Length: 259
Image 1 (cartoon, rainbow, N blue to C red):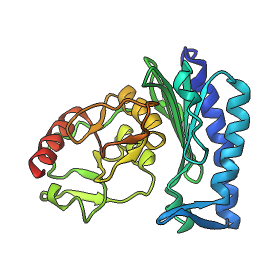
Image 2: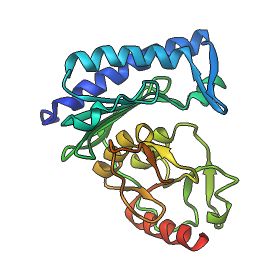
Image 3: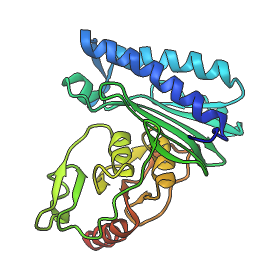
């Protein structure tokens, strides 16, 4: 029997992620119009519909919270709020467009630069990852932890197979998922051993995944092992590395030696 959740935002964002996910799943089945916000940066009507639902649910429930979302104009008011929602209404839009079930709703709650609650929901696989500070991390209500894989030999990685070749050893495998939030959540749950990205990300990509990873007992940092601060003047984050403690240290050193 689980104990009551200490952070009420955990239940709120879990419910909101599920509601937005139902909208994405409906569009996934029937199709959605897609276009580019900028070169190489796609968006669909499903992203915007999910964003609208999240705004309605979360801003109504927490009108004093700040707001940062990939699909909203950042008016800067989040910088003076005690807590802020950091949202990606659909992380993995390319997968959605290609008909692959590798997209998620990602909702983080950030206080004083640190994530305190997070929910990541894949509506097609019905996987709900969530966590709150000091409460642990779960997948569909069951506690999760990263693997204790100590070496790259035999490790299962998530990332770009071409750009991650320098990390391969005998038996190492690399798979791809478009949603970085989903990748990190899968590592937090021990489904894969590590996630390595060669490219910078944004607050809305990482905030929810960060608290889920740390509460599961793993590490999410940049390639130099430095933690992230969110909801600052810039929303860009250095390329992320996520893994259990032992493999994280090995990958951090390997990545540093590549530079």
